[in-house]
Length: 384
Ligand code: ADP
Ligand code: MG
Image (tube, rainbow, N blue to C red):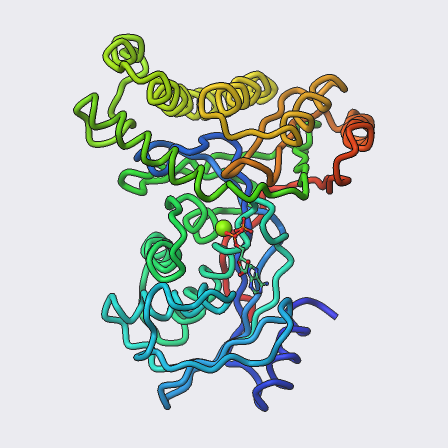
């Protein structure tokens, strides 16, 4: 039985009728462009085949009912007019936050029955939260005929996560889930949300991209994210620009010379060089020089490890052991302090590299990682 039928059946069992529709939205990995999205910079994610699926119907009585197949507990019931940001600590804050953000923006969402099921690993830096938000936003957009565009849904989902859930995140995750296309990476300018779909078909060129989920999430990650973000804002203020995106790569040395604080200087250097790396990857992919992106990924990892300082022993080991076993490139991806790394490899080397990473983790007495292949998949869509 397909995921779609399963979700429809579960909906019918919960709510007593068939759903009006079924939607899906993917998790994502970021190929390059880390911690640039809150600096108005460039990112380049692609969608995973792992998705959150929602079955949903409208309600006219002012009630929203929420259920997740992946969480213990029954159906949560709430009234849209009673939603208050920052008050819900449970998983329901993500879908409820979307309802709140839509209503706050003036969209007449009067109620809904929603059942969710997701295959996106939770807390692995692969954006299970954005998948959940975007699938709910797309379902409500369709059900209520709101006519919102993908980028607008992404913005509202970001607002749901920032304000209603209370998690400070940039715009990348929601935009990736809402806008990615199969077989492509998404080159996104987070300042104006202009985007370009970049063909990214590694299999056709005899390569693979592996995701190494380290299965760890270090507890200080959220506080550290806030500190990095504040440091970047401080850097921009010191340099007299709106955002670090406005510091041209060619003027980086001059800019750094104007900053006394060593920590701020390192943050600025990461963001400015990372934007340049995204542009370099785009032009390499455009010219068909795909293998040459490997060293750029490795540079990106070094910058995140040494300048931005958000790697951890597990991520470093994933990257180093993959490279030692012959990977073309590797880097941590996502927020840092755990989560996942990506590895670019020749197809013929995948088994050797996977084994080497697993053995290195075992030798270090780390939790066994989960290694899987990521093929650029479709963004959010209606399934039925
Ligand atoms: P990430 O987005 O990297 O996976 P987050 O901490 O941002 O990690 O989001 C994870 C949270 O999203 C979970 O703790 C849970 O509240 C919610 N979530 C994700 N997937 C589901 C699901 N299938 N059902 C219910 N809640 C989910
Ligand atoms: Mg998240």
